[in-house]
Amino acid sequence: MDKPLISVIVPIYMIDRYIGICIESILNQTYRNLEIILVDDGGKDSCPAICDLYKSKDDRIKVIHKQNGGLVSARKAGLQESNGSYISYVDGDDWIGPGFIEGLYTAASSSGSDVVCAGFTRDLFSKSASFLNSMPCGIYEGEKLRGLWKNMISYGSYYRPGINTYVWNKLFKREILLEVQSCVDNRISLGEDGAVTYPALLKCKTVVVTDNVEYHYRQREDSMLKQSAQYSADAQKLKYLHDYLSRWADSTEKDLEIGRQVNDYVLSISLIRSGGRIPHSEYSSFDPVYFGKKVVVYSAGTFGQQLMNRLKESDHCDIVAWIDDDYWEYRRCCMNVDPVDSITGLQFDYVIVATVDSILAEKIVSRLFGYGISREKILTITVETEKEDLLSRFLDVDSIRWEEERNNRGVLSHA
Image: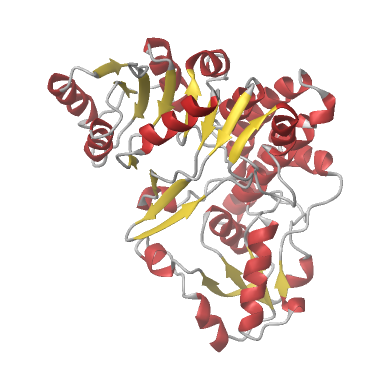
């Protein structure tokens, strides 16, 4: 029996350094019955020409040239042009192993599933690490599927998703995805994957979670280095996300607690993007005992970078050092990050662990114990019981913007 057509949609914008590797990896899939849709989202580099060149080389390739509208609109455009029974997304700066699509299709066809959820491999320059979903591998249907729905966005301790948010390491039946993707607000540019993945999963009768990690997510230098812009811009983006997902949650069964899960999800992004602080307020997601003390910040990811920015702005403490296992990769981005074991030669009062994942935080705490650091000197995030109230403060765009503008006027008046 002939295998069904699978459409692979690739949104592309200003990534001409990487797009060739991405396209070649799709062309070299062991699953051959593919429709490859390259969506040029109005880039001003060589990507449009590269797309057209590849179209001339392989008749499985379609190219869409459109005005820049962002990732959501690019994915919509590709989906509207697709003809496959199944849809897979690949971001244009990533790449996939040769058996990736075949593995997803085998999992889908053998179980009759509507969505297949895989893991992924993160490629950080010369280092690679593989990640799986928190929900165990297996087939989910009936009551077991309801258990997945209750944990898919927020799983166990704060905060870890049961199924990772990404659309690019999944295989969707087209009819499931089309209904969901078409409704997403084009203004959403933070958490846009979650706005698709979770509503799609809730429409399924059968879901498969696999240990396939052949999707390679490329962590680029420009994506490692986060902007230190004021939080109000991110707060507005997160408000779009929260408003959209909250309307969806209101239409779901109450016992699935989708609304609570959505709040956990958006609050986690808010904490990460803000560095755990509501701008120009005394609120901190860490115990304020570190005020006036010497601190070490552990982690140089998005949360760590934004936390460093906020600590420098507030002048609440003396930053002794910034540490991370991937310190030399961050140094390549001109960030002053040191190896974790350097902590043994430092004098400090507290270590601030910049992660919202309590399971990961406890692993870091155990590691710090190995360096002789007591639990009393290690600070991990503490989230208020009234998460909904806290989230509303992080999404109060007008108030945050007003405080930022007032602070800027104060800075200018002193200059």
